[in-house]
Length: 178
Image (spheres, rainbow, N blue to C red):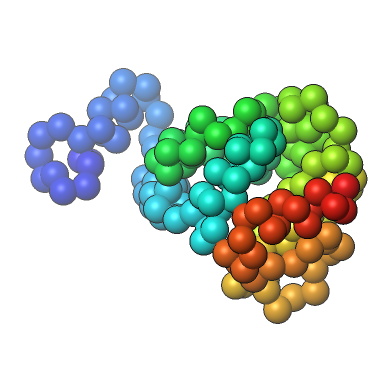
């Protein structure tokens, strides 16, 4: 069997199977590839780039803590040209338990050399909010549409969009709560 779009000639799946002697689950590979491609196209949340710039101007160190693979996160950050804005990236690829366990957030705080209670996490999911609470991290809830109407775990501030407040106003508000 050859790769998509070929009827004869080279097919990467067939070639890999012949080299390794392993039969690939092509449907699963296609599903995974499609999922990765769709995720990679996800835009930055409205207001995120401006918030990153404002935080960097204040000398605030930034980190990413994600339950997704490091490879995907790094690629997504590079795609949006914001990778250099983050001092560290922590993912399950670091061997950490994923959300709702607090491990990713605790590791990110340690990487930044700050106490978890002085951190603020921007979270769009219930598990992320639970993990922030378990880590003792303040949480700005910016839920995605699918969970916006559900009861959410405790949070410091809830926004429908990061564009709801100018970045400086949001940073000032969070600084007062610390």
